[in-house]
Each structure stands twice: as C-alpha cells, then as structure tokens.
Length: 307
Image (cartoon, rainbow, N blue to C red):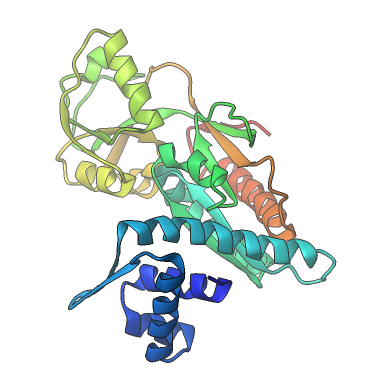
C-alpha cells in the first residue's frame, strides 16, 4: 500500500465512478483498476463493489476511505511545514462550519482567501455541529467554528463571538412584539435541527424548563432545508441571524428576538497536537478579519465579537 494508491482510492470513492476517477487523475482506466486490485490484494479485503450504476465502497472500503483522507492530509501538512521558508503560501486548508455559519461566512471567506492567498485552496466542510469537533480531532479538517463548544482535551478552543437566537417565521405569521418566550410561540409548528445538535439540545431544554411541549413539524440536518421550509410557510425554526440573513433583509422571513437564555457562543477549534501550517495560520487570521468585517458592518446581525 502506498500514497499513490490511497490517492487513487479516495478519488474513486468521491466520484463513485472508475472512468471519471481515471480522467480526473490523468491515468488510464486499466492502470487504475490494476492499482485497486493490488491494493485489495495487499490488504486482503474487498474494497469496492462495481455495478451498472458505478462503484460503491464495502464496509472495509469506507473504513479505509476515512483513514486515507487523514493520512493524505497529514502528508500534505508535513510537506507544507517543511516548506515554511518558501515565500509563496500554498496548500489546501479545510475549515468545518455549522450550516448556519456557512450560509453567511463561506462565500466572503472564499473570496478573501482567493484575493489574499491565490495559491491556497480553501475547502469548506458544511456539517452538523455535533460532528465538527470529531473531524478536527481526526485530522480530517484543519480547524472548525463550533457552536457552544466545551473544552476538550487535545483541542485549542478560542471563543470568537456570541450569537443571539431568533424565531424565524414566514413574514405573514403574527406574534407578540418584543422578545418572545416559549409560551409566546409554543403552539407554532417548528422545524428544528436534527439531533445530535447543540442548538437543538438548547431548544429542547428550553421547552422542558417551560413545562411545554414543542409542536414539532419536522427536523432536518441542514439549515438550508430549515430555511426553505420557513420561506414556504410550512413551519418556523430557531436559528441565529446568520442562517437567514438575505431572506430577512428581503422581507420573506421575519426574525423574532428570543428570551431563551445565554447567546450561542461560536468557538474556533484546532488541534493542540498537530502544528499549523503557514497556510492554515494565514486562513485563520483571514477568517477572523472577515467575521469582524461582517459583524461591524451590520451584515452579520444579532451577535457581538469576543476578540
């Protein structure tokens, strides 16, 4: 087993197609198939199942895929660390974001990185908040912006900002003025983030403390689905402003301030054991700059900086 075989294998799993994988890797398909056969022979397990609709990993294949991603990232990090004296900052930097944060930060950050560090490739991993810490610990992403992250051994955690939570409804929904409490809207159908999710746990606790039952319409793991449901008038949801900024500005979604305890804390998390490459350090700095710009210019409302 070698790095080239791992790189080939990861690309096949990502594309689920041998022909497309071979084209993207600039190798002949028979050569790619031969390398996969050698890899399976070396490991003594079947990794791929070939069918009419493409290629699917076996259980062993998925296990290798997860480990191969970490191995290839560590190799890339090592190369970048050894080249720290080079004038040009290069490499791939992977940042994990909760869906709500990704909706307001992803595109501005991508543009800022491309303008400032043109040789750096930024990867945005939009994933449920409960998975962010695990991805950092596994080395599958370089750092994350994790909501309500508690201190964890092996992680460097830096609080960045506090976000208020809002009840987001269709513009036509009528509710009392001022900050709402659970009794003000417990009857409203809600579509909420799927468990496990830090925000969902906070909402469930608030309803439990109020001795009221949540009128749960549905649940989804992506804020894009939650916001779409609110936009269509199907249900309301509870999220920070960042999840629906453009819709709120356009007037299609109304944001109602909530009295639901402390604001949500957004924390920058990085590995305490893995040294940061120059590229990662620079992207973290740019990320902080962009967050500060979005908050101070009023684009990212309902939050306050902690740095």
